[in-house]
Amino acid sequence: MGRGDSSGQALGLPGQVEGRATLQSDRGDETQALFRYQWSAGVVLLIASVGCLNRYRAIWCEHHDDLLGELDNGGYHAIQVKTDATPGATWRCNSKPFVDSVRKFVLHEVAYGPRIEQYVLYSNIAPYVPAGTAKKTSTLGSSPMRLCEECRSAPSHDKLVKPYCDAFSALVKGAGAEPGVLFNVLRKLEFQKGVPLEGFKEHVSTVIGGLPACHQLTLAALAKLRDELLLMVGEASSLAIPPLDFYASVLEADGRPAAVVRGKRISVEMVETMVNQNPTDSLRYADVGGLVQVASVKGQKDVLRRKMADGYVGGYFPAMWLQAMAAEERLLGEALLDPKEALRKREQLLALMLVECQTAEAAAAAESDEKKRGAQILKRIIERAEDRAKHDKTSVEHERAETLIGVAGLLSGSCHFAWGVPLEEDGNGT
Image (cartoon, rainbow, N blue to C red; front, top):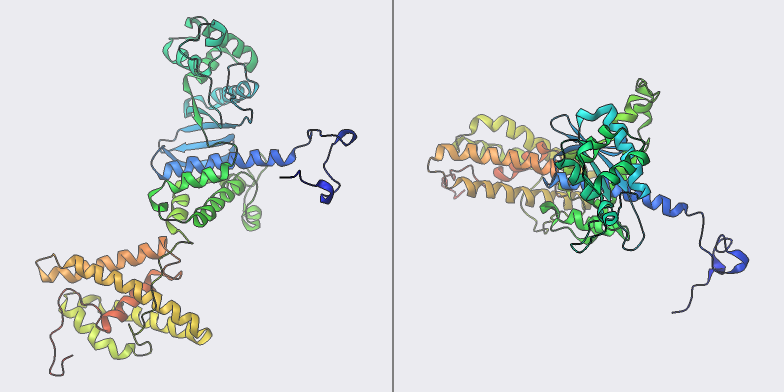
């Protein structure tokens, strides 16, 4: 493979001394990539919470720290995100980024100590852990993991043993901290290994794909969901809020509108909703046709009433009937605007709700008391309609639960399912 020709690049390669190969000094693109890595850390922590792998109920982005994990008990985890692209790199007690993180944690401990349960250094590299053959005291004392362990086991900072007391003293000086405060920080400090820095977006897709709700997603669907989550964290990390919220908010003590601060919080429920919708991988039914003859709902009224009465849910007929009429009117109205698209949508809704209704009917068949079957069927249909409308918007064509329940009424009125007690045939075989 030949070397790339840079002649077609705007102004050529920047910073080349005397036309010879020279490393760039201004790497703004790499800086932007590091910000996006911080977004990926937020996504990973939120996805882990959806999967019940941590205790966070929400993540605050660029609020007090890179990330702030909110707990149900009112406590918090302060999270610093650090990266290092050096091959084989590890964090040591004298590593400048590690010292900088500890310095920030010390400030938190002074201001909010009792409310912060844990400090977390989230990074693409791990802290140095000595091998069993390591003997040099300077090597052993350079391990942040060992220093934190020593602090957790010692009764106070002045009881630390060598070589960890030396590393602790050096960190006191480097972080500009009071010994007692630093001791508390190190006792609460944990390390978390994040996704690799190289190709981190693809690794985040793999993390998301580990959720049960995402097992069946295609690679393209995972990538779309990943990008939406990254954008959400990125906007929460900046001042990206709607103008109405911005100008309608009172100012906080720091001079910023309250909506700016509120916008930095991403709840786990928000992420769970995005995950469960799976907007690009919905189930589509084949167009089999002939399920319900639209524009004939009034002729189905008596059939629907009789079926619901025989199923001991006749008291709910008025509500079901009104929703059936509303569903038909909505489908007819869309047919006037785009007949082909309306037909496709109608067949999808009819097929989907037929499966839900007959599944509910089959589940209720195990009930020995036929007077209870209809109520069980109705309850399941309503629950499934509400669940579909909330978590599977694409499959239900972004329709409300009321429309889906109305479609169920159309199906029952067209004799596609009963309410636990099939109708007896009349003299004409109907």
